[in-house]
Amino acid sequence: MKLYKDTTGQVFGFDAWQKVPAELTELTAAEVEAHINPEPVLQLDVFSIDKREIVADGADQAVLTYTSESDVAFIVDGEVYIVSPVDSVATLEVSADGPGAILYSVRGNQDAIIAIEGPA
View 1 (cartoon, rainbow, N blue to C red):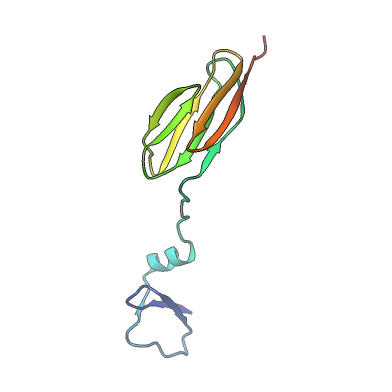
View 2: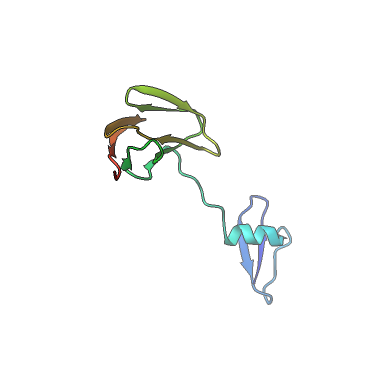
Protein backbone atom coordinates (compact mmCIF):
# COMPACT_ATOMS: atom_id res chain seq x y z
CA MET A 1 0.00 0.00 0.00
CA LYS A 2 1.20 3.50 -0.83
CA LEU A 3 0.03 6.69 0.81
CA TYR A 4 -1.11 9.77 -1.13
CA LYS A 5 -2.37 13.20 -0.13
CA ASP A 6 -4.70 15.75 -1.63
CA THR A 7 -4.24 19.53 -1.67
CA THR A 8 -5.74 19.84 1.83
CA GLY A 9 -3.26 17.34 3.30
CA GLN A 10 -5.79 14.54 3.80
CA VAL A 11 -4.06 11.16 3.40
CA PHE A 12 -5.36 8.22 1.41
CA GLY A 13 -3.97 4.71 1.02
CA PHE A 14 -4.05 2.78 -2.26
CA ASP A 15 -2.96 -0.76 -3.04
CA ALA A 16 -0.87 -1.38 -6.17
CA TRP A 17 -3.86 -2.70 -8.14
CA GLN A 18 -5.98 0.43 -7.45
CA LYS A 19 -6.06 3.44 -9.77
CA VAL A 20 -4.83 6.58 -8.03
CA PRO A 21 -6.66 9.82 -8.90
CA ALA A 22 -4.43 12.28 -10.74
CA GLU A 23 -4.98 15.10 -8.21
CA LEU A 24 -3.26 13.08 -5.45
CA THR A 25 0.49 13.12 -4.83
CA GLU A 26 2.49 10.35 -3.24
CA LEU A 27 3.84 11.02 0.26
CA THR A 28 7.60 11.29 0.67
CA ALA A 29 9.35 8.92 3.08
CA ALA A 30 9.47 11.69 5.71
CA GLU A 31 5.74 12.38 5.28
CA VAL A 32 4.94 8.66 5.62
CA GLU A 33 7.00 8.50 8.82
CA ALA A 34 5.26 11.60 10.23
CA HIS A 35 1.86 10.13 9.33
CA ILE A 36 2.61 6.75 10.92
CA ASN A 37 4.44 8.11 13.99
CA PRO A 38 3.11 11.64 14.59
CA GLU A 39 4.81 13.93 17.09
CA PRO A 40 2.95 13.94 20.41
CA VAL A 41 0.82 17.04 20.95
CA LEU A 42 1.62 18.89 24.14
CA GLN A 43 -1.51 19.70 26.11
CA LEU A 44 -1.42 23.23 27.54
CA ASP A 45 -2.49 24.41 30.99
CA VAL A 46 -1.42 21.20 32.72
CA PHE A 47 0.27 21.26 36.13
CA SER A 48 2.48 18.50 37.52
CA ILE A 49 4.88 17.97 40.38
CA ASP A 50 7.48 15.20 40.52
CA LYS A 51 7.35 14.63 44.29
CA ARG A 52 5.48 16.01 47.28
CA GLU A 53 8.08 15.25 49.93
CA ILE A 54 11.70 16.39 49.93
CA VAL A 55 14.60 16.20 52.36
CA ALA A 56 15.27 19.58 53.99
CA ASP A 57 18.95 19.61 53.10
CA GLY A 58 18.97 22.43 50.54
CA ALA A 59 19.90 19.97 47.78
CA ASP A 60 16.85 17.70 47.37
CA GLN A 61 14.28 19.30 45.09
CA ALA A 62 10.70 19.01 43.94
CA VAL A 63 10.05 20.20 40.40
CA LEU A 64 6.85 22.11 39.63
CA THR A 65 5.89 22.06 35.94
CA TYR A 66 3.20 23.95 34.05
CA THR A 67 2.59 23.84 30.29
CA SER A 68 1.83 27.22 28.77
CA GLU A 69 2.59 29.47 25.81
CA SER A 70 3.00 32.50 28.11
CA ASP A 71 4.92 33.30 31.30
CA VAL A 72 3.82 31.40 34.40
CA ALA A 73 3.66 32.84 37.93
CA PHE A 74 4.64 30.24 40.51
CA ILE A 75 3.87 31.38 44.07
CA VAL A 76 5.95 29.53 46.67
CA ASP A 77 5.53 30.47 50.35
CA GLY A 78 4.29 33.91 49.29
CA GLU A 79 7.18 34.63 46.89
CA VAL A 80 6.27 35.09 43.22
CA TYR A 81 8.54 33.54 40.59
CA ILE A 82 7.80 34.41 36.96
CA VAL A 83 9.05 31.67 34.64
CA SER A 84 9.15 31.87 30.84
CA PRO A 85 8.32 28.53 29.27
CA VAL A 86 10.87 26.70 27.13
CA ASP A 87 9.14 24.69 24.40
CA SER A 88 5.84 25.48 26.18
CA VAL A 89 7.00 24.06 29.53
CA ALA A 90 7.70 26.25 32.57
CA THR A 91 9.52 24.59 35.46
CA LEU A 92 10.50 25.69 38.94
CA GLU A 93 12.75 23.72 41.29
CA VAL A 94 11.89 23.98 44.98
CA SER A 95 14.20 23.03 47.84
CA ALA A 96 14.23 23.64 51.60
CA ASP A 97 16.84 24.27 54.29
CA GLY A 98 14.54 23.34 57.15
CA PRO A 99 11.62 20.99 57.77
CA GLY A 100 8.02 22.07 57.30
CA ALA A 101 5.36 22.69 54.70
CA ILE A 102 6.17 24.67 51.57
CA LEU A 103 2.95 26.14 50.19
CA TYR A 104 2.68 26.68 46.45
CA SER A 105 0.12 27.96 43.97
CA VAL A 106 0.21 27.78 40.18
CA ARG A 107 -2.82 29.01 38.20
CA GLY A 108 -5.38 27.61 40.59
CA ASN A 109 -3.41 24.53 41.68
CA GLN A 110 -2.65 24.89 45.40
CA ASP A 111 -0.99 22.40 47.69
CA ALA A 112 2.10 21.88 49.78
CA ILE A 113 5.44 20.15 49.55
CA ILE A 114 6.58 18.63 52.81
CA ALA A 115 10.23 19.12 53.73
CA ILE A 116 11.41 16.47 56.18
CA GLU A 117 14.62 16.20 58.19
CA GLY A 118 17.21 13.98 56.56
CA PRO A 119 19.23 11.27 58.26
CA ALA A 120 21.56 12.54 60.96
